[in-house]
Image (tube, rainbow, N blue to C red; front, side, top):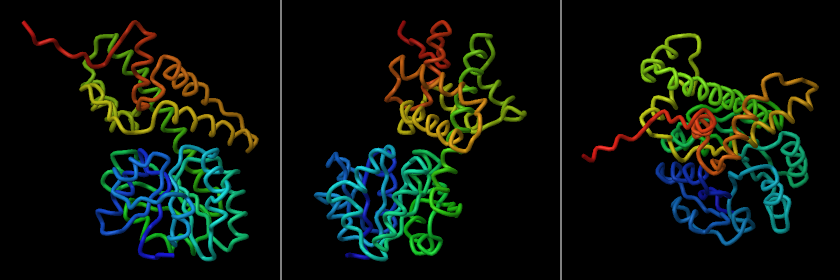
Length: 302
């Protein structure tokens, strides 16, 4: 086991960015991904298997699409669990179902290894500059041991409590993100159809009670044609909203506001935007509102 080298499994959209932060700061990364080209693009040393990463690294980071993939990677043959060693720390940076996370945590205790669930927020832009926010559940001592690694790509790390609380906090945050993005998309399409100057409308919203992350950080770029590519896709946003719905159901709650983002991102997926950044939900809403686009390229040819 090589303490100086950090293991990273899943070097896609977010994992690759976090890996680059580690390397820029002088760290070394041993990476594995189903797509070998993603490992090289992230600047990591290439591992041939999950097992190789776990066998060689004291701290192993996971950045995977969902709980189904996490379970396959962790609990599958020659996976993380099979090769886990005493005092090893596994940090799951994925957006995953808290009950699945707690189950894996329990299994890892059998090996004497720590399993931290670390929800991330901030998107691709924050990942690029190492300014992510982490919400972490699991063993506090293990978090203290891993924090110097997490600091490579996170500027804020919050300890949430026992196993599963980090991923729970992430689902709560992502639900609010989905609501504000979907609702602001509707408002901006309505503003466009009403003939309002969208830059002025955003100035109003950002000085008024309708202000939110989408009005402040997303739509000032979108109205100029920049959809901030590289962030969470419509498919993944839909997945997170469904996970939130499952969570509140398990908690014995009724979610009165889940139908809006489910409809909005479901529409985006149905209209062909599934693999595009979730900001394109505004185009899906525009499509069913008369073909509205917030930004229209001007043909300058005479």
